[in-house]
Length: 340
Ligand SMILES: [Zn+2]
Ligand SMILES: [Zn+2]
Image (tube, rainbow, N blue to C red):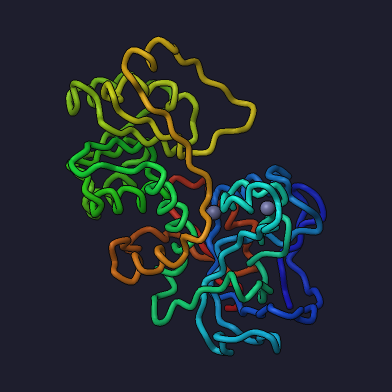
């Protein structure tokens, strides 16, 4: 089969590699659509514990072409999504059910072969049939699962006002679910107008164009919209310059959620007095564990509407271009169709 194969950071080829035999409990999937995301950009640079040789691709949707003898409940021809997380199930955190903090956790597309290949092998236990869900919707299952986890962590109270900074695919899904999830007013602030416009068509109440280099104009507008701050602010860009500036826009007694991913070495300055005096809660949210079933249900019910989110499509041989597309101003979500 053909696959993207990295031998070291920034060096990959798309080439023919051998299909390995299935182990008990595994299935082989012909990959139909695989999302490209910021994580793949980090992996390209050798971050996130990438293990070589590496075939990236962790947002995997395809069709089962082979099942190991021991597998029950899955059949050749089933259209499925792959939960890419692999937990050891025996470390201290796994034994408490805190799978996201598994001390030996790995993931398809990061340390084990992922989806940017004609085929991927995965454990049957991590396979979720998607029925007749469209491929465009299915491509959003993994990001939606991560958002579902974020909303679990957030614990939104009905009627709360929310500010989301960022308008990428994850922010779009987040905003749609906040709109459906009881928020009284959802504001999105981000640097790209067309992404804000899309969010508005999906129900966001107000949008604010934000200049990454100068937060002041956006700050004035946000203060107009919420003079006492928002009950919840979700920072989803990962830009510390924005995270640093949003705290004053959290209402006293409100919550700031760190959803975007900053580099490990970056820092911000916080005045502990402000957290203390204004009783601000700061939360984080990382990945997902066992949220695929709910994500699929939300996409089937169109509570997450994929329309307009996928802007760029590539074949397997165009992986280099797909990675570049992530930086293009007109790109919201890029996907690879490995089998076409
Ligand atoms: Zn991703
Ligand atoms: Zn573990």
